[in-house]
Amino acid sequence: MAGFNRTINAATRDYVSDGKGGTEKTRNAQTPLCYQIATQLNQWWGDPDAGSRLFELERAKSSLRTPIVLRDILAQALQPLVDEGRLTEPAIETDRNLDRIDSSILTTDLSTGEQLDLVELLQFVG
Image (cartoon, rainbow, N blue to C red):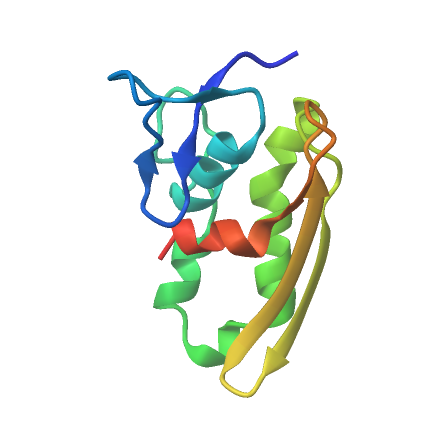
């Protein structure tokens, strides 16, 4: 079973205060998910699997920003958390809608049983 994580607000990127001068703690996978998605892959020496390749999409030509590429990048980023037993295999659906990619990314946090919609967490990357 995973230990406690500090609770992070994905919209503000701040830790959530406990009102006593500290931060809220949680056993859910939201904080590791936020960091896994937002961190560039291979940027932390302590864990070569930490991070994702989402930063590549910002630099890529629009023709390379396809639903399939986004799906593959997200699946690769989430795999370490699946391997650790923190999440179920994500159900990732992507579709091009004019000039943007619409996504549905659902997984279940195995420590809480909560279903997570990772599209909401992607705002952490922005």
